[in-house]
Image 1 (cartoon, rainbow over the protein chains, first blue to last red):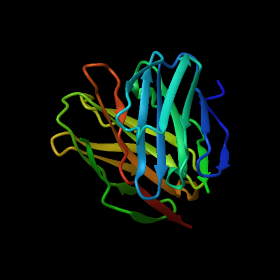
Image 2 (image 1 turned 90 degrees about the horizontal axis):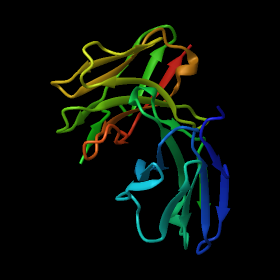
Image 3 (image 1 turned 180 degrees about the vertical axis):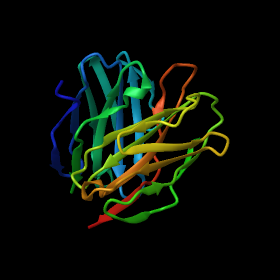
Length: 114
Length: 118
């Protein structure tokens, strides 16, 4: 398996622009998570899905952030409009039944908003 | 809300020696899991080891083992025979069960930076 695939790896955008981050979970994994990592706040859970349904979006910072999972093999995290404080590394992770298998993380998308 | 404490911002160890990275957490859940992840300077998150709260034995995975003390809400990671490649950030992450489902979400501590000296 190719693991969790995120794109793009790096994104630089201007303040006010729309940014879309993409994630392909491991086939057969029914949970998908979006995390954000910054120096100040560490790793924060933004939202997670089970069987494509959002379960907990309490970590989404504000209405500028939205996430979708239209099918079992694809999810997006959108920021509109983007702001410099959104600059961070965004990770997608997935897992299947049996937590001892671990949550597999993608390589992350490093977002810089200038 | 979950509170995870990794009291050691930075740790140093000599190559081939063992090192213990501390983690305490606060949960009211009776059933939960504990994960440790490694993040090298390249940035990826690497799963190391898992401990279930009802597992009677401490988890081991190669050179990694957990010193799990449920009553103290402590899950320290022990790395034996340290290698230069072990230099990285290490995160403790309890899994919070949500609404009775089997799987919840990971909440990460602030991490400990481990540096292995030759």
